[in-house]
Amino acid sequence: MFDALTERFQRVFKTLRGQAKLTEEHLDTALGGIREALLEADVSLPVVDDLLARIREKSLGTEVAFELLPDQQVVKIVRDELQELLGQPVRPQLSSRPPSVWLLVGLQGSGKTTTTGKLARWLGEHGHRPLVVSTDVYRPAAREQLEQVARAIRQPCFPGAGLDKPLEIVRGALREAKLSAYDVILVDTAGRLHIDDALMEELSLLKRELAPAEILFVADAMTGQDAVRSAGEFHRRLGLTGVLLTKLDGDARGGAALSIRKVTGAPVKFVGIGEKYDAIEPFHPDRIVSRILGMGDVLSLIEKVEKTVDEKKARVLAEKLRKSEFTLEDFRDQVRQLRKMGPLEQVLGMLPKVGPLANLPKNLEIDEKQFQRMEAIINSMTAQERNDHSVIDGSRRKRIARGSGTSVPEVNQLLRQFQEMRRMIKQFGSLKGRMRGMGKLAGLS
Figure (cartoon, rainbow, N blue to C red):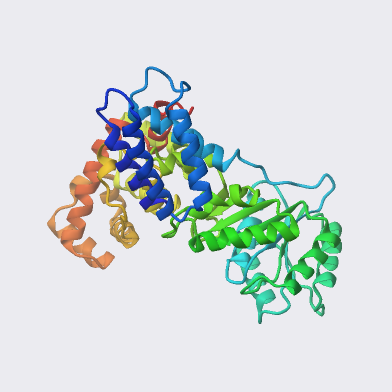
């Protein structure tokens, strides 16, 4: 996400390092680079011009701290102006009297049905009782698809059996929600390949009937300015309360995320960051800006760690580390917890691009199967071997390799990695403590 934009910004800021004073000539060069970077990222031209004008005004003004170096001055101003562009975080809205209705709208193929499931799961994890319902009576098997999604996330779905009109379906869903005490109804609406009057009239009828607390436009971030233009049209006709950008983890240039609030007036409220049903999160403008500028997203990483790390196991591990008793069993648990955090490319993307991390390849790919092989190797060991790796001699390595479907060199490699991790963890502490330390260093906690 935003890799190309981050790389361009880093190059621009590098040209300012070593300068004793920020001159207009230096600023012109930097702003030219920033302009190219934003346009290549598919940010709307009017948005780019307005942003650069404000950066220039503040960079040559007196608003910057005197003690900052030229590159630090520009980074601070760019950060502040990007955050202003994206706006403040906006919390999802709920009605004063449940059930609250969230109407999901958008073009066909934008990912509304999968996103409905993701939102239902997210709501369920945050203390709500959601009910999902599809009013797409036109696309073959659309309603059956949402039922399958609901089963996968273990959330209820109103099938609307025997009903074939959107208004009838939502009225039935409302009755069901009130009878069964569901507090949020997620309505997956029909889409079109293009915006037409028939679609908009149907959505207007649903809006009048349901009085939704949220009208969320689901947009594919990969489509860039096309997503922005479509959102603008939907906002004009329906009055959107927010936007949900899907596929923000893909090879998106990021322009939609940076342009959509300025162009449409509707804030981004959620972002989809992967294919799994838990790959959705509220939109945090400040964190996105930090990642764009190469500063990482330590807060989100801390949240991931706290969500996946077992507190009891962490305390036991800390005690083992204190006594230098870290075993292959513990190593396997650490690998499992790391995998729970999601794709490792995303995890690394949350780290600041400084020190050795500054030189990581832009499109780093990590073989997830390698972690599966590591687990298979450890699972093929006896309890004695997992608790005391020193007993693993040549014959045992051959047996372990056969049992795990790997080779002796792969077993040897894992044992070397284990010993290296043992040294590192002994030096730096558990993963959770390390992340908290990074948060303190960044002034975030």
